[in-house]
Length: 338
Ligand code: ASP
Image (cartoon, rainbow, N blue to C red):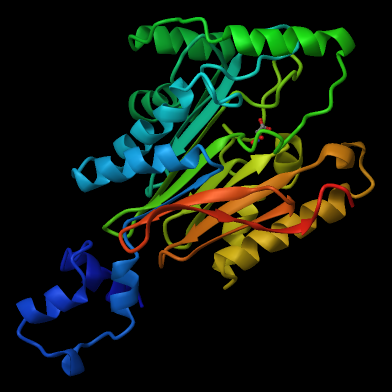
């Protein structure tokens, strides 16, 4: 198996397809040594991202990959699109603030060698995914938080900007009238953007970026910047990422568990479903259950992908050579009214 993978890598087939390879090597199809290789090769590269805002993010990442950019650069470029979009209420600029009116951001990024960078509770920086990438590249650490993350961002040349848009401020002031904390997930059909990529070499990478749960306590950090919770990958197995109520994903080490289930032989879909069921079992008598939503996306090292959510309404964007960039509804355990 590993010889087969090494072989694929050595021939640097990338996206050209087995047909081209066979012709170039003077074999006919009947003599092709590895019949299943064709399927694997055709599936790369492939990008999956959470929610509708995954579509423009995928499109940019795809463009960058096709231009030959390094995969982490391509992920960063894609995720910067929803970060800069004032109409996305759950990511970067335009994201809902915490209960004190402060927009605080969480993000992380991880490559196929398990290098990771992460920032949490970061204020005033338009592109936390870029700061997370600099943590990976330019520090001996995995995670920087709050004031320290901001100081690091400034030292790297990032500028402080006001991320609270008038629209988000208006909604926050309306929320203050009752000040009831009950995260409303799915209503606008966009939350954290989590992206997973298998590149032309068959290597896995991923990222997450979010402004977190609206009206959270000041200082609250969700699952999205936590490697193993909001994002995890093992290049020998697969990658997984989460969206939804971060507290529930942290309690269960969600994304790490999805990867471990794939290691045990589960498909990406089966793995996402099993950890979602586990989260349900752990929370069915919990106070969070009333508003609990979690969703997972997963991708294995063969380029197969899947998703599952606790409640209805979760979708994800898929981009590949064969079918382009499109949305798919995730299967789910229950609808919101049950
Ligand atoms: N997981 C994010 C958080 O808890 C929010 C979301 O994806 O809806 O911060």
